[in-house]
View 1 (cartoon, rainbow, N blue to C red):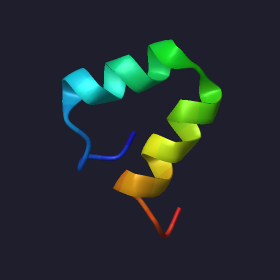
View 2: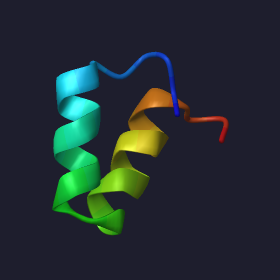
View 3: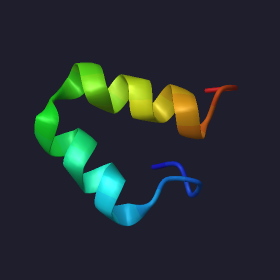
View 4: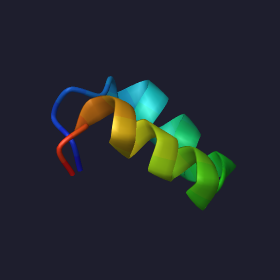
Amino acid sequence: VDSLSISGVDLDFNASGDKFGSKRCALGNPGK
């Protein structure tokens, strides 16, 4: 879980699906 993500957005992307979760992870943690 990247600390840069807003909790509400984080939950929303996780609920939307892995493809969005991966994008969220890339946005929050580019090095990951």
